[in-house]
Length: 118
Image (tube, rainbow, N blue to C red; front, side):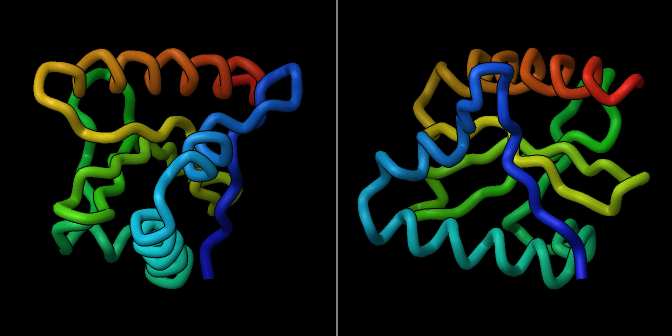
């Protein structure tokens, strides 16, 4: 079993929780099921079409795909030391905006890492 944690900023906000709360019920249900699969199977889901590495200089940085037409995305960091997946940022895939959302997720990742002493 792997642990799931929602990134929480200094003000107590959780970007993925807030994003999920705005999703329609069908997408929210699908995303919840994908998160449960990640918790049960860990990085074995890399062999599926629901989880990909986000390219770049950051290691252990992934993208969970789900929802209707796989339009929902969540950027995730795998904290190996804690055997925990940190859910950083969620968005709906839209042409021309993915890179902007990935950069936003990368910023959140660096904030998280700075609080962990890495």
